[in-house]
Length: 154
Image (cartoon, rainbow, N blue to C red; front, top):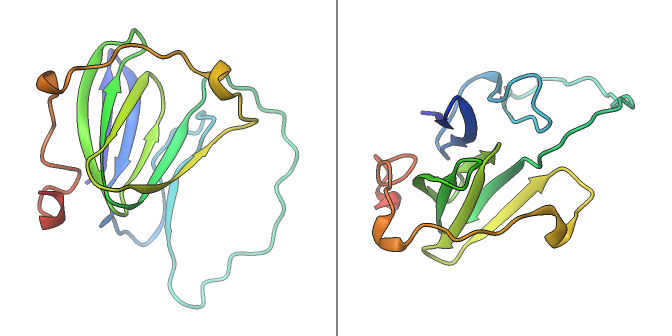
């Protein structure tokens, strides 16, 4: 099941569990997002015509990022744009999250390997504002993890 986390009518995150499977192409993002996220599942022999991407001027104000958890278990704390804590979710190997807006923080619950994909160029520390996050005793996890039927989530 795809999870969309929202606060005050603002999409903060999209989580795609490691066991998501659907034939064809599924886009999870709106057409106007500066970071697009899609899942593709094609049968053997499917041909995707060779192509190049045309130069199109695009502007964006906020960085969106996609994380693909390759190994381990990661707690993601989600905040709205005013730094208010919304909820936490636990990702496991193979899960994907698009951090669309608001804030976020992380704790590696096990050794973690992950890919981060976001727009560039990289701005370093100038591209972020750090703030005080939620205390561990106040964390609210919605379900054990994205796929709470999976024993590896426990």
